[in-house]
Length: 193
Image (cartoon, rainbow, N blue to C red; front, side, top):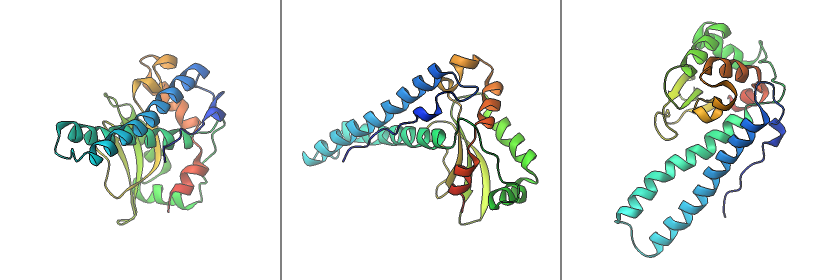
């Protein structure tokens, strides 16, 4: 069964994000969904033809992780945003875990923001390690490189240029500040646990 792109039009009108930027971003995301379906169809055909050892089979399987994570990371990113951001409950389990790991909510935010502002393209992700009961802010360079195996993404920030250049040019810090205002902490808190 093919994957279907989710509709995130409810984010149109989010302060700090022009309608054009969001529409462009949604179109890019829809491309990942389309490519996952195309890659899957091609790989199934190659498998049916017994072409497991071919260069095409190998390269398309390598590409699959890029397209898959591009699809899922964009879904997580859009899902943890709201037109009017919701605050993090200061007495909730997630806030307590952030304070335990980072010392305070402010220190967590400084770390997350600084990581997002680093040179390069990629993602900044607040991960939960359910085995070690820890939280980590992590830089993911490409969709398919740098993820922490077994960890759950709680908060996802897209820091590829397509996420901000139209509105902010080179002012990535201003984009990150707008993103922080649009976080739907209710959704992020539901991911925790």
